[in-house]
Length: 236
Length: 261
Image 1 (cartoon, each protein chain N blue to C red):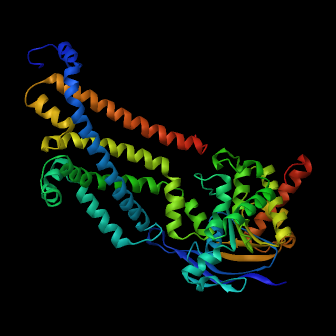
Image 2 (image 1 turned 90 degrees about the vertical axis):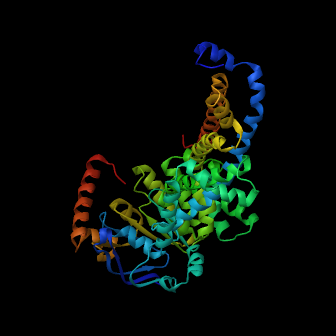
Image 3 (image 1 turned 90 degrees about the horizontal axis):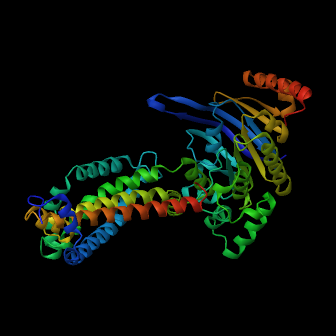
């Protein structure tokens, strides 16, 4: 059903039709799969790069000015690429790894490549929030840098890290929708093929509902977890 | 008396905005073993920098710092970390770890020092008892009052049984009553374990209450040092005079109001 020949109300009613939703479970699964796998890759690499940025900062634990400046510059370059261009750039990489340039797994590489630099910056800003005095106290106690990172820096900033991760997962989700245009499957693929190319706006609406619900869920869980940690620590 | 801390000709210059700023300008200081030594000075006099140079949280430019016969500035990195187990430090803002419970905060230095698990439990219990925190071991620092937080800070500083404690404005964020309790605790620790304490503060009362000897720090130099009473009664430096004046004022206020420490 299309908005071109039906009223908005009719399209909304049609968008709730179980027949449409039956066809959507598969794409929903694909979207969840892409979001989860990309987010995990982003989490691992983003954390590592974010930690390295924080400690090599001129005021950090192991100040390395050149390395900090260069990696900061590279990250800014990667972040200045629009997500769509990153997907196109990653086509040869995906082909190299998976043997094909389309499909869910191929797009995960592009999504991760695009979101890692962003998440690394978010991790960096979370880690920089720590009060300097806590690091100093840990140093005065005789901790080496590794235990300061693992036992002080990360746990102390955990609530902020979780909030940052939540925001990043949502941006991964929005990118999976974009990747749908490039044959990644998922909700975005449905929205483009039916909603855009065939004017089936009832399906487009259904996709919008799903995305809204997913974003609300992710944000809700993130807020809940980070709040609960703060509550456990009696900080709120 | 045996000298425990000996600082000779210590210099430190910072470069804020590229311009040199001499924060420590040839510090000479001797602290005896087992005494509570006060360093007083206005903000910006270099007190905190001096404190941080002693355990090398701050790298000094030149000079030497001997702590119990060890030249701190010459230690390689690994030895320095070990040496720091013997130096406790207490801070104005407590700097407790919010992600850990009180128990974990106190246990942390022991874990870092590689003390076996069974011993850790015992030591934490013992230390918590000494500072009066046995009831709060499961709580997080966020649930504690300022005075209780500083007790955790002190417990964390003494749990490794250090020879020396640096107290950097430890009572400056506390109200007068809590200040007395914390100072009493420091006194008790000093008496019980013979730990040498360096009290860095801008609070006259704290020095008068707890220290035997003191030094006045002024623009990166020690302008006078000696018995606390002598300096208050017969000051020889600008800062000393000013402090003596404030001290006399406080004393007369105490006579009329019966307040103060």
